[in-house]
Length: 128
Image 1 (cartoon, rainbow, N blue to C red):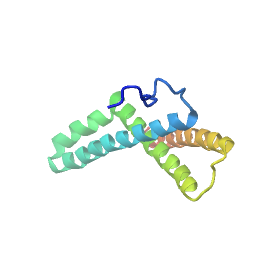
Image 2 (image 1 turned 60 degrees about the horizontal axis):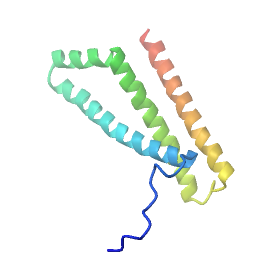
Image 3 (image 1 turned 180 degrees about the vertical axis):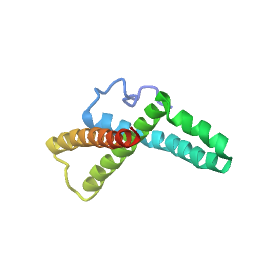
């Protein structure tokens, strides 16, 4: 084995760029969506266990921690969807110019935030 060969660069060597940060965040939201799916399955499963168990589950989801988890899940869903659409455009051969990459990345973040806040605005208005 040759000990003089260069090592591969890693995250401590590279300066974070918009594309790399958004890519890592896309992966993180994918993991968050998997965890949120477990929460959703738990909610459906609690329905089959009876009214008392469902009330406890609903009580947890109505707490500040439950709202924070569900808000984060909603943002992860919106971000993952918007960034997936961005990747579909790349797959079709559009948006490779560096200025377009930065603009589309910023658009993904802004649209994700706005759609999440809009969804939760309507949720909170309807529950008031």
